[in-house]
Image 1 (tube, one colour):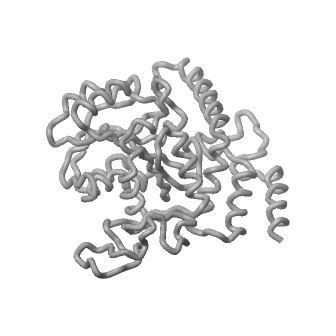
Image 2 (cartoon, helix red, strand yellow):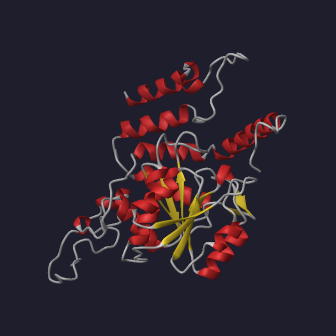
Image 3 (cartoon, helix red, strand yellow):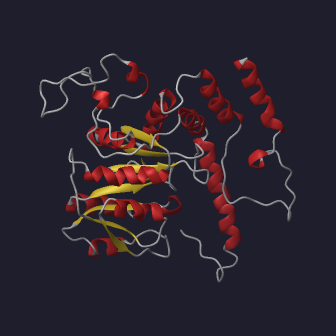
Length: 336
């Protein structure tokens, strides 16, 4: 029965018109969407196959595999998938409050004055202060001269999104972060697949985030990711994403009798050294429930295989639009 259903999925796609697929294009009449998913029957097949398989409904092995593969793409060692790019930014900033590592309570975070609200919102939601800098009209990115002018002892981090996949001067930015001991919180919602001097964007930040909303490079319908090369940060972010749970078992590891750590039933509470308790029910962060569905991980894996093609298509389309709008410089300004 399952095979019959999956075979029908493959037969259905070539004759459907959902998402504008297989629709006849009539110049002057057919609307050209400004964005949308670039996928085919493979993503639908993988999503339905994951549901029919019945192994994991919420975050499981497909999500875990997607996290591993995505880490390679952005040059980080660890990734945590969540339910949206907005949630990814929330988790990234919330991790700064964790007493297990940074323990910040009232700091300034440099961020552009113009951008999407999900960059600024988590700064305010966590009780931090946004330190606004203006953008440069030529690139729409924050100006580094202004960044350096706004740095005070209270500023502990810089957070921004690479606009339209175009980074600012990353050599200068990273030099500033090193000299001033600043954390770099890197939002790559617009920049997956872009790079600076051979290093992928998303690989520079202490933490970096990505969004998988349909308007972005790859999509899982909704979804987001936090990536880092700091193992302790990864545990904090995963805990915040999973209710604040101290246990960091994922997928099949949840089924292990003694857990990933090998000490699932140890004495986890320092104040009660003689009390053994299941690590899965120890909560050490004030967390959220921001987990994705496993079928989203399956879709993400299928999308990653198309990354090169999608990247080339987006660049080609951008070049076409830029050439057209360049004919009207008094009406349109295209970021460089």
